[in-house]
Length: 383
Ligand code: NDP
Ligand code: MG
Image (cartoon, rainbow, N blue to C red; front, top):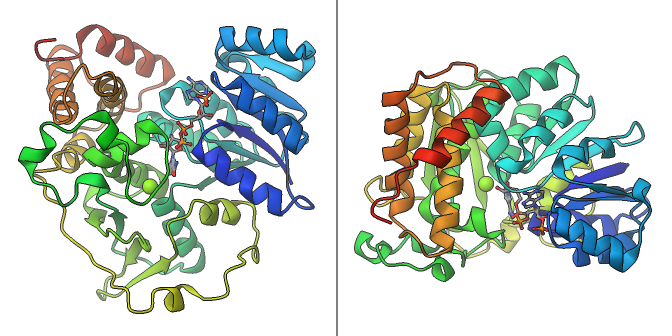
């Protein structure tokens, strides 16, 4: 199986390479990209014999060329040219670039007719309906890698029965047990220390604010064509049950697995027997409890906002998503406070809707124009 890996130098990329290392006879990464971390990309290239590379950041690409003098055929520079890496011999394309910078690439992958391993959640949230119809039209098979959605995808593959709703779980992030007053003063360093998952900075902050779960509620709506009242979220700190399908008779089914991104990624590669663990999940869970808790909307208003965003529809998911990306960056630079991330997001969303017409079924141009408006008008309190 030949793999094109966008975002190879991140934490999802690390999980992909761990699997590839153990399955070298079946899997090969033939092309891989990064934004600035060209040194890590070069190490990966040598270790895994990768044929073609992509570097988004132009300065980093120049440094790369001067250090390793690669021919132009083997190096693609700038996201806008990453499409060139989609060649006919590739079987699976993984999108593990973080954030909305991957928007155009997500379109290109949806058009490719390949198997599309979707880790990036931001693109599907901003332009979900179009991305999904594009994939359908071009026979591109989207397999979600986000653990909750991957669970639902697998459950739906094996159960064709009509269901009532789905439940996705949240670990609760680093502040699940903290009081609201504590959240006022948390620092970026505290927010990026996730108790369960090792992830990039942006998604770690999203987990701490619960915006990650809010984004995942929207992601689930688009991926599985659900109405918002069919999706609910609960906190499950042990992160063993990632999601469930709930039937009309009030029975539910779910998949149990350790919180390890290698599980959804192995599923993408159709690898059945690559686990070396001797004990099954129930034996591993011996004497451990699985707990579930309601999400406090007071402490985590992002969840309430997700449903409001779905109700408004049109551009609202993109506005919520893009605002969040801008605000998380400002929080990481210590320019705004933790609780301001969701607060300013909602204020900006309402401000947008007061002064602009909402567009239903927005296209890429509408999305980009909205981002430009947000860059100029985002509410940032007094800074
Ligand atoms: P990381 O921040 O660890 O990695 C991001 C990757 O994208 C890196 O390769 C980075 O390159 C590249 N990248 C960043 N910005 C750009 C850009 N502007 N143009 C091109 N490439 C860029 O993120 P994660 O691996 O944790 O997450 C990746 C995606 O997967 C996110 O959308 C996240 O929401 C989603 N996801 C992640 C999970 C996880 O467990 N990590 C779980 C579920 C979903 P460089 O190294 O050079 O900066
Ligand atoms: Mg997830």
